[in-house]
Length: 630
Image (cartoon, rainbow, N blue to C red):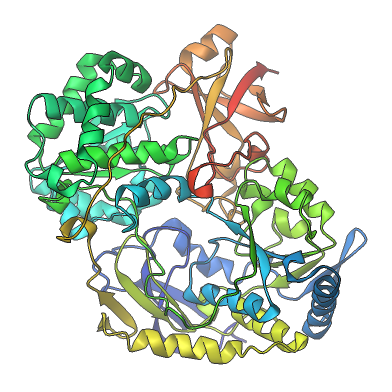
């Protein structure tokens, strides 16, 4: 008997991972198996990465959650959906009656990026309000700086087709081979046209190793190099013509620039004058150069200023004259979600995405019910020890998930979620301007449901005035008739998205201050965590076991002084009092004060601290550790 209903027709879909690529795919059931292939109509998608290919196994993984589970003591008991919804509704009703709707909290993140996830707040509007988090664990800090720099336009983006025709591309810490692999064809085209790629990075990443130039910088020192380069351009009169007319505060910016101590800037960047001059000459000889900052480059308490100064350099390098000299970070993947499709509640309490555990513990009214979807905060969020404490203080926790994650284990009710191959939905991308209408390829396994169906059923059980199915259908109709969209193949659309650098009305606000110097406590290393090419942070239950080994990469001199060899077990002690045992690996590309480890490793985020940063993002790099050989 076949595992799936026979259906040899190729259907349109796209990967919903929190990744810029949002790869377009064609999928079908053939011979009882699901097959995936690239959708050739998406010109910015040429292959399916290892993460995406694992969805074929994920859909049938024996560890997958297939039925609602309720905690009973130390055990999990399978219950029906009717029982689960009844219990859930009972807990919410009691919380709202006793403490009001703010006692119900939602923690939702980017575990799946489909448009239907944006309908979930309609449930809370019908409930009368709720508590939620503000900010993101990934890009909020840098985005906050860029939104200020663009005078409110948003985050600037340069299309890949423009990048491929530039003369140079400068990665400010972006490890595109792991975080945006679909850039590879564009980079190859850039090189074929005589251009070069270069990388400013704290370590020799996979992208840096394949770049034509690599310069090592001190963690958090990107802004200082950018400021130094801005000053050189202005002093040498090599800045582009006309940039002042597009900048609303050019006088204030120039005063800050002229008062800057050039030697101090290089010290902050951790670069010699000779190296900085080499970078400067490279910029001048490769115009236009696209500047692509990294998610990691913003994960400091001054991360907004990191991006503001890199943006300023892009302006002085001619971003307004040629978009290929601009800065490209990201775009709004949900920009075409229909505005006004439902009226959001005005009764919303917001906690910071990193500080919410501490805020929850002292909140009035208290949080009585916590609903978690598309997220694994117990593994992803900074200072995960506080997550355990906060969850223990909440009367009733519900998690909608595909696998029994670390967060799900801490909840009282776990609901089985469908994955994109089992759903109809819409999805955009923050690395391209394609929009996909995902078709259902196979029926949901077991009793799995999509999140919008789950919250629609909960609304019905509570007697709320909400037709979630009707809202979902309305969303699809509104997107499909959007005049901005052009269908390029069945259920795959493209839109001519506005480019900040090409709009005549675009204005910029450049930085008027410099950040405070970064100080690493004596005897400590700064721990930088980086993305993996084989999993997305906390979504790694089905990742290859070899990439989940807890390894901390340390500078060579540091290891020599402490007689630490490759493979030695070391105890890591964080400045926040947490500790973790890992295996050491020597990385000769690191500076003397830097260590790095792969994001998503179990227990790693106990070491990080839950600081509040601009944009309410997560400054993971504000983590200082000492190392003891065991």
